[in-house]
Amino acid sequence: LTSEAELSDVQDRPEIHVLDATFISDGQTPYIVGQLYNQDVDPADVTITGVLKDSDGKIIGQYNSTQTSLRTLNPKETTPFRVGFSQVAAGDNLEFDPLAYTPLEISDDIEGVELYVKAVVTTHDLYRGLSLIDSQVESSDDGDVLSGELRNDGVTEATIPRILVSFLDEDKKVVWVQNYFVDSSIGSQRSSP
Image (cartoon, rainbow, N blue to C red; front, side):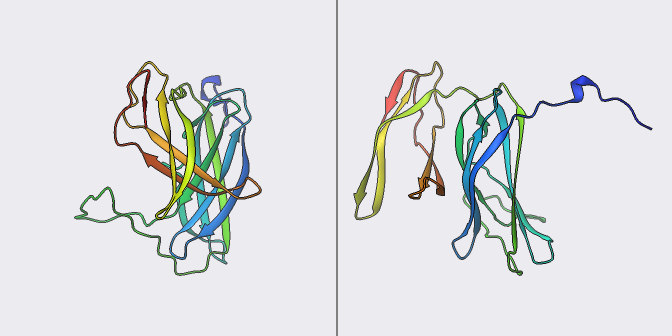
């Protein structure tokens, strides 16, 4: 039994290009870091999925990039990303701790890494009213510190501002991505250090 697909069932898929992707590990947690580019004329809602495989090709870990990438990309926009693999909580009587993190327990060696990027056209969450101005990196005894001013040129308050920082090597490839949340909201047409 075959039938024709309805036009309303066909989704437009923006063309997303992986500019670079690298597998890294800190000895405990495996990561995939890199950057994507929306080369389409349509804005995209993007899902980035990393998969780890053993020597038999069996999946031993799968995780999505969460807060360490832009979820929506305007046309010709680039985003860094980081997929960090962690253990998924399951079972009964679990207490919720939003700061808890359980590293992925892998008994086999990681022999294969795959990255999947899916996108659909979107019209939501595309406005970028916040911008970082007068930014600079200063060295201190505690390490490097990023400073600057966040400016909200939008017409609505930015209630939970997020900063996404990518660290690049000398070839301009992403080696790490970190996200930071600002402690206070930034009102419309306002700035905050």
